[in-house]
Length: 304
Image 1 (cartoon, rainbow, N blue to C red):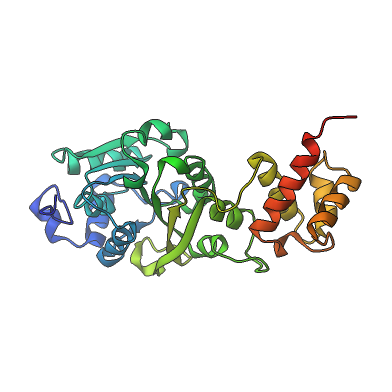
Image 2 (cartoon, one colour; image 1 turned 90 degrees about the vertical axis):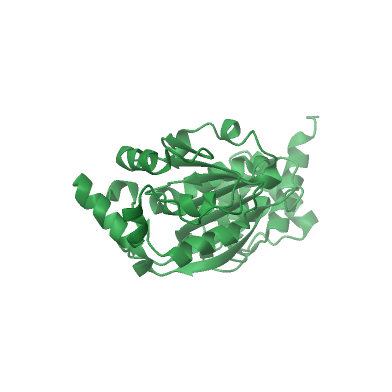
């Protein structure tokens, strides 16, 4: 595996062109423009592509699921090291181009389709979790739904390295009290350790987006960060707390978690020394877990 070229090209001509030129040539040849509805911005900086691969710490024992393969620039870098790459691309024209480029590369498999409609457990089932990695230049308009979908299957994934809008990446790593801190911050930290490993300015893409981009690495935890007895309740409480960010915790929970009575909420928070006049954005993940577990205990008590 070590002898593979970091860039696999379908012909000598493309090997002599810059990535920017390859994008322009493809668009001219096919008479197309980047699909704005699909959020198409092609990453044309070889250094940034290598940074993404380095962030994943790939080995020749790894299986990589790539989301949004585009013209295969990142696919080539990943396939230079990984044992197997499955690349998903929703655009039929790009998918056809990928088929031409990688038809003679047996350890790259291509799928045309929407990542949110794939059977991820089936795709991720053949390798041990520690050798299963997800790498993607995410379409910015569906970054959050994809993140939640990946977190749903955290036990099957060792790590994710995802390029996304910097604002979203910073929201994910924000601590309590920060204005960006919210449901996504807690949800990601519950399942994974998150860090920004690289930043990519707009001019490294074609066409250039109007926002900065960051590469976020998620190292999946062996067990969740906090012990939660009822995950559904835990996330329901978190969503409720941030659904009305300006409200005090007491009002936000009583308004948005319909089964909680004021008496039970007061009793649980008194026991936990959680001030209900605080706003939800000031609570850390351990306090949310304690609150959820306390309410779950009351819910589980048999009726008199």
